[in-house]
Image (cartoon, rainbow, N blue to C red; front, side, top):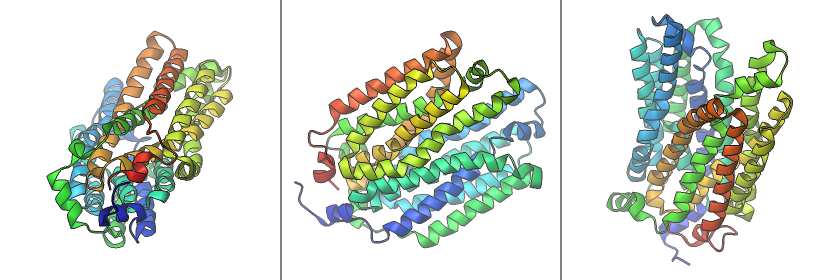
Length: 418
């Protein structure tokens, strides 16, 4: 057992403000994700309004504008995490919310598609409120409650991903596309104010000095659990996103009424997210009780099993039900992944390593649709589900093999450095 220093005691018991920090982070993450995703339904229309007339070019520029944010965010997430270790996690949230306020508001003033893409890149570079909230909550919450708190925060983030496109489908017809961007900027500005004035982060001069002296990988005593979690996070997002390019075509093969294809495809896409929202907090609470590694391994194995029948469904409602069950199984993974990383690295290096975790998840978000579309188009759509099943089963076995020997709540969680 490591000696209990002031820092290890802080890590065990968390900040006295951790509940208020959790509430503000939850509301801020939800609102910023809503503001980020509400443009999805009208993005092609806005690209056309900015002067792009050819249909193929509209689709191409819409894809570039959408992906620019995630590419930029993946590149800078470890940097923001590292700076958060040194200068404070709250400061990173203040920076992100203010930067997103400016960038999204300016999108409503774009005069051509190049400016839109540049501003989407800027959002990715300056943003990261939700991922920064994960770091803040992970490092300020008592270890015994960390997975539950992260599960609650994860539910809010996923809810924002669901609600954002719904709002984006309604607001432009009421106030216009440009005013919708201004409204989104105003909402994020409220999150900026709440973050700046309500979040209280415990200051630790010793953590700042330690982060400057030795941060990142050099500070990690045992890298195997961290590497396992980076891979698991990437595969989780990969599994969820691999179906995206093929879902509409797959649904069209399962239904006889062409007029319902897009509606049912939307339900299929939302089913997994809804299942995750409902299960994330409960699975996080379970992980705090029985151990994060057990929940992670069980969730991966359950997802692998549920992917098999998805390749052989005979109607769309079977697919919806299976995606919903898969969402329930995977709902606790991201909170548990974050908790394991948090408990496996020193307190002063947590932000940088968790930033790498965010980058690995973005890698899955990019690779999933690309490989899913390629496999579905060249081999067949059932192969997408079966191939992803093999990956998830392999991840479950790998996670089981590298877990600490006494992982009722994790050997590193109990004795690891804070």
